[in-house]
Length: 427
Image (cartoon, rainbow, N blue to C red):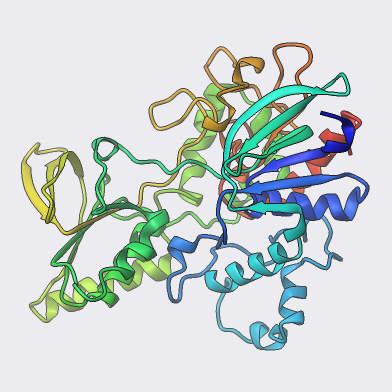
């Protein structure tokens, strides 16, 4: 391999995180060469959850670029302007933009970088090799081609979390929320009798409401481990957790301090629901009870203890966590609104991204079992000759809530990674 075969930055994944990085590289270091690989042939941002009427829950100016460069061609406002929808959008009586419209915005930006991206190429292996005597990354794709980079940025998004006992079953009748829309669209001609939704998140409630509209005669049960469905914490003081200053503060805290901060910050983004959809669901259930025809149920304090695919349905054994009463339920479809895994050693986490299995022995873990990630998102190497490797959008356990699957600090994170590349003499 020679230096002419090698780019400065090879990115794995081309969702919003690495798209934001590609834009930042173009605008800030145009001489830096970069190439990206994306497993999806035609990626659609949050394609499984582009539900009618669902919104972003995020200020539209927290987009791919604005916090880093508000004059950029790639801002959401400029997208609206170029589409001829700016004035109409500004008149929209909504606090946040429609999720569908943001998906169109991401597609619009993605289309402008297609020459740099290998779409439909799944990464099979990541290794370290030599480029003219210097260390570099060798990335082997599903197309059989090897690609070479002086540095690597992993931006694949987090792994869907499939909790026990669903992690032991492989059934077309059990779907994670990432596959929700394609799954229910296949059921249009044969409406299910009973659907179980697992989880107490914003996504869970949106799915329940969507199912109730699609299948008005179907029995829909949302199983929630807590007493009920909590309201999201939208205090502006809590929302400062999505400020860059909080990221720095969180990074410096020890693991015990991080756990305390996580417990406080979780209701701003996890296992909590916006008031509008929460009220809509409660009113729907109330009206169904009034009509004597309740078909939508939210059952709190419930935990699914066992699951079995019976071919025509899925059998669930559900325990009431305080009385320990167990009932058996059968559902034609189970939707897991159970979120995603963070990096770490705990049961709901994963120790490192699976794609790094071939090189993970080159990097350090702390005494608590977490990958050591520098402030600029670079993994700390354990041995000489390890080229720079950055994690983009995977560092919530080290950098806090602002590194979650949110646009809040996306563009600033891209700028921080570029600073790290500059320190290495790459950008």
